[in-house]
Image 1: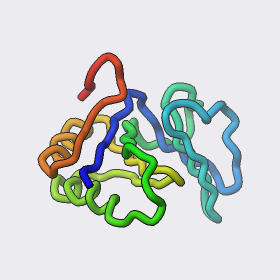
Image 2: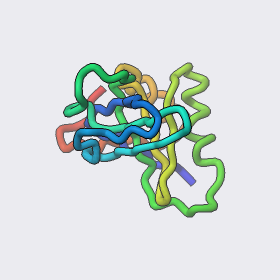
Image 3: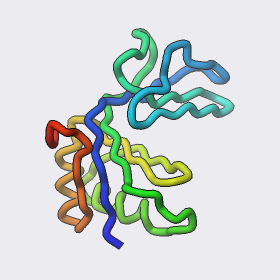
Image 4: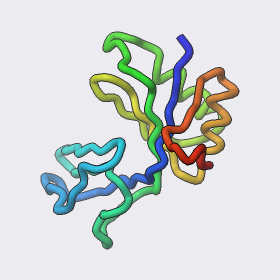
Length: 134
């Protein structure tokens, strides 16, 4: 199966909050947003625009969506996506939802990631109507 990866034009940030803290801004925007609680932290992945200043952040990232929905028991998808990036020494954040997988790539490394994926035989397109953005 040839994977189809769709890059989104919006820039996202990963925001760190103290454990048990809820975001005090509208973080549920954009193509992908998630809130994760652990015993030691709360992480928010959200659109860069609107994040309050002064919070610890990483990014900006661009999000890449695997065209889905994917069968829940399908195996090897992340391996096919991540192996070309490992070879190209590109660090990413990878997550899964019920329907598909999502990869966050630093904005300044997206062009290199797209090239690595294409060389590996994956289909890479943009969801932007304005065309591809490096």
